[in-house]
Length: 159
Image (cartoon, rainbow, N blue to C red):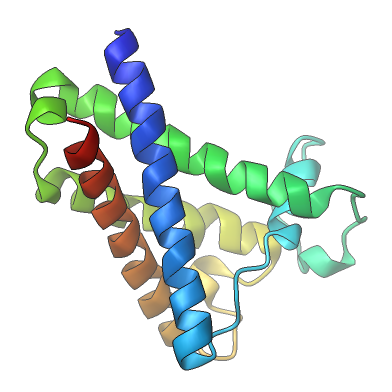
């Protein structure tokens, strides 16, 4: 059990780091705006007070440490996903990981962004209120595929 726990935590951290590196590459190579975790931190803070959905998170009461909370929430979410993968797939997968289970989980996790986080921030279901929702959706799918590569890659490195 402890083996699954520590591996799940490591897998989640490794995958989240790779996703963050991908965001840096997109910013430096293509000028894609970097991730801003402050609004997510504000959302987590309000979530703890019972408010899930906002018309616009920028209009919600600010929280002094929202950027730090956003980063913590980002990594905590990645760790939870790593733990879920490790628990579902079990010891046999952890000793001989394959990409497909990691990719399936990576794509499934897009749903949390599309149907919880994005409407929670006020950008609509699956980014429907953004200027270019299809671009946002495509970037989400690509980022979560990179996350899946990180899940698999980290599991492979620590097997």
